[in-house]
Amino acid sequence: MGLNKNFKQCSKCGYEWESRNRFLEDPGLQILGYQVNFDELEQGFFLFNHDCGTSLAIMAGDFKDLYDGPIYSERLTEGKDCLRYCVIKEELRPCPAKCECAYVREVIQAIKTWPKNSGIQ
Image 1 (cartoon, rainbow, N blue to C red):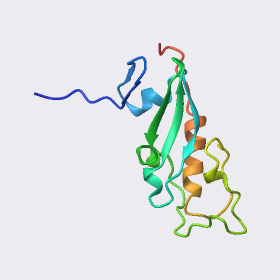
Image 2: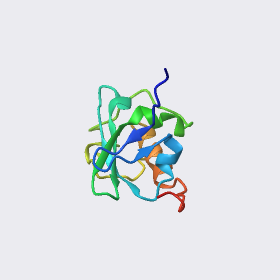
Image 3: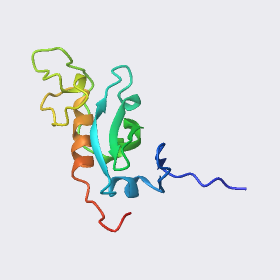
């Protein structure tokens, strides 16, 4: 007996996204921010608003493959080149610093610019 595992289900209205692509292309979703986990960046959360009025949190690691550029090994948080974007949950701009956290900002850009499918209900 197999389990039907969808990518995500809305905790308020019950809508189910069968895959990450269907999730990203849903015009009823909007990225709100990123809740950082400095110990393990992939354990941080991307925060989304669903048009039913609820917010959804999905682990950043579920989107890591959307970025294929350099990932720096040193975290520059609080250094002279740090713009503190990662500590401002609602900040969605890319970060120019050559910092371990910068790739997450690039993943946010990929999510923000993902083509929406107007046929999704």
